[in-house]
Image 1: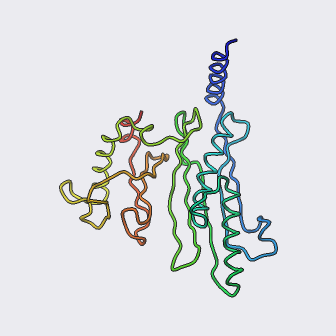
Image 2 (image 1 turned 60 degrees about the horizontal axis):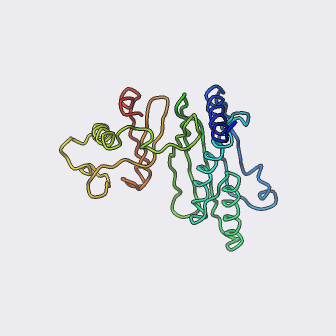
Image 3 (image 1 turned 30 degrees about the vertical axis):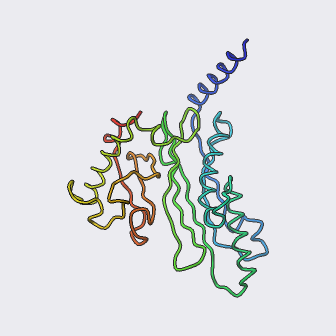
Length: 249
């Protein structure tokens, strides 16, 4: 058997197995009560729930790595913005370590860090796996911050899908999305996109880098401070399945 044919055959088997094996995820939980570093030291309030694909699935290693890396980046960005963790456990460890270092410097402080993350499968079918992550993080100051993230993966390869890999014509989809955004936020077609108080750069609508599939369709999420103030929270643009289908690849 030639090397090229062997590689093709191996890839075909992986594709076939991935197509035929059901996606079975298991929720994993990390909390302050089961972290070794919290046994004899003061610890932040931590609840992290995240999904792991059953290890018997052919794509388990790829999908679990992608999802863990995504969740870990959210955690570690709060305490180590120049060096992201690659697993959830590493991210939590860095969060705990940062808090305990802070308490070492300021032992009388009453500040209490908080980490609350809920990661779950929002939608999956033969084409997409859409993992949603709701989070709230507090590391001191006037208030914490939270958000909503999506990770869209190719069901056949396990790799992350960017928007131009999901929709056929990104420019046409952006035009459609602007119409929907204006409709959902009571902005007339000819009015400035920021006329009701949004903060789009140069008064021009643009798509957010946060998007994902749900049971109801497709969501585009503008995080806190992207186009509005903190008190407004994340701004979500909801598009139904019927609306999004003509634009999908």
